[in-house]
Length: 364
Image 1 (spheres, rainbow, N blue to C red):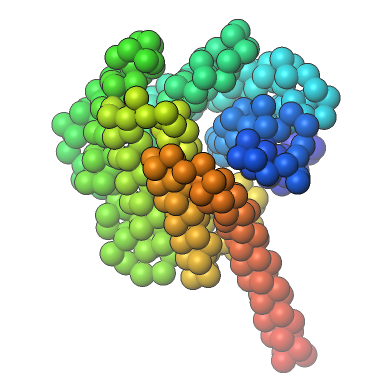
Image 2 (image 1 turned 90 degrees about the vertical axis):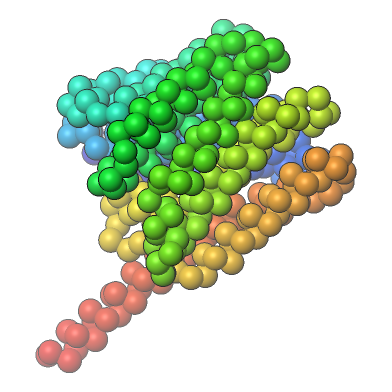
């Protein structure tokens, strides 16, 4: 069981991110760092290999029995199976098994704490399971995408409710949010190019407005330092979610509709949540004391947001060359953010060690 320490699984999370970015670059026309299978499995690597492994790891760490860390490990192992062994069906099957494990984790946690945010995250885990089943059954990523969106939306909203549970949010507001999310799930079940995308988009619009008004990010963004970074980061993510809803509802006839709704959600909304939650989540996952926050993160964060704005604007204006340039910069900005956070942690640890040595010298 010692082999299942989170620190040993986290490199697989980063591997999913790196290979997913390289696959995205290949799809944009940059083939200098092409990895066989990365382009065709781009969405699976990003949602399953990277995000699925990270979320499973985060939830498994709450469990007392470390056996549950087996499931994020299985999720992470889908990456080499998809790419280097060239067994896509087996790779997706591993993700399906991992999502079954996440479902079991969320079920046990919900039985122990039967509150609204646990139910929402449990439905999110079920959405990942159904998305992986759709991919396994049809071989079509497009069939899995709406369920994957549900997985991330419900997981993130559930986590925001969990972190905001001490705020005096009216009961009617929480019930209203649950109803809105129910309509989103209904939208997934309906034909996407019929009423499904409209209902999903309308639900997403309402969720984003709810988060902008009721989430504690509104309070945090008015503070300073790390709190301001988290609060502004979250609220910008909610604006990306609002834009995603607008695209789903009103832009279905745009020739790059698929690209627009995918990347406003999976990049704009989801990665904004990652950057904002990193100072809270990563120390827990990696079992470190140092928080990966420093004002320098604003630099990488700004490049990420501006390059994504450029990419989305290029898609709206049907400018493929600019879209590729901004997409390439956006990929680099994601890796830069993780490098900056790693650098902050390393420098904080070196400073702590140096400070301790100085104290020992002075006391001797």
